[in-house]
Length: 309
Image (cartoon, rainbow, N blue to C red; front, top):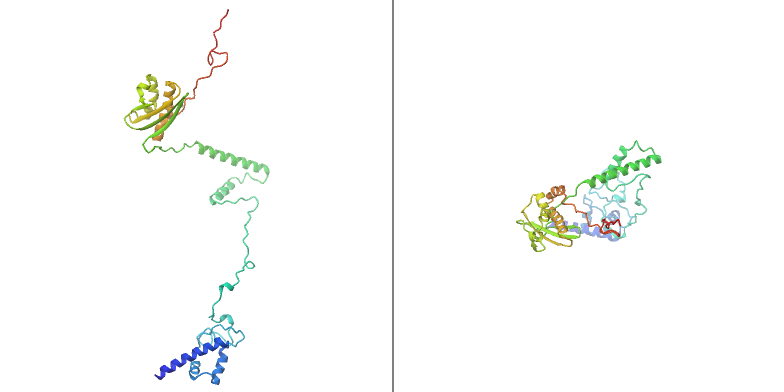
């Protein structure tokens, strides 16, 4: 029981010691003199005689005599017994961030965009920069700093760009199938004054023109053979049903319009049909038109009958 009371008294004396330090702003030296004069109780004196020194907080009074340190021992390692510097003390108080100085315009250097050297171009894409360097290495012998060499280099670059453009344009476009929700492919054809819209879909080879049978609409066999040319070229006879709506012109012009629309519809259905039809000329519109009558002529070129007397 006596030992328990002694420990409680020592703890109470330590608390009173730190409280006086914070309230009075004095150092440990002043408190030690107070202890020697008997101002504190015996428990406080017992606490001051302990061999272990507690960490000392940063004091508000900078002129006070400070003998403690942030080390648990009486003196920090390597010290000569002199008073330690203030920055080596342990900070125990809170620092307000709102009172700090954030104005760093004087300390930091402002950002400045680097201007590229004169005559040197900058590239956002590193690939473009590498291409330019390779071109410069390949044409270093042509450029000697004169205006004539600059013009020659510019002409060579223009020619190379034109070659690349020609190569790109010579490549055939990528063609894909274009089929609607009903499984049909659409093609539009014209010939003379006739205009035709044609739809093809897989079937048994039935052909309907303006809601009439194919044979009854074109009584001449030459017109029917003319229309069936794309099927023969693509080897798809009897595999597709055809629905055509045509107006304008005569039967020959309408047959030519239906043939062009049919060839285009087959190409939309399957682009592989295009090469054979292209070789036979079914993908090209016939530009021949009726020539107009001229003044003083009976027709476009026929003149009136000449009578001697």
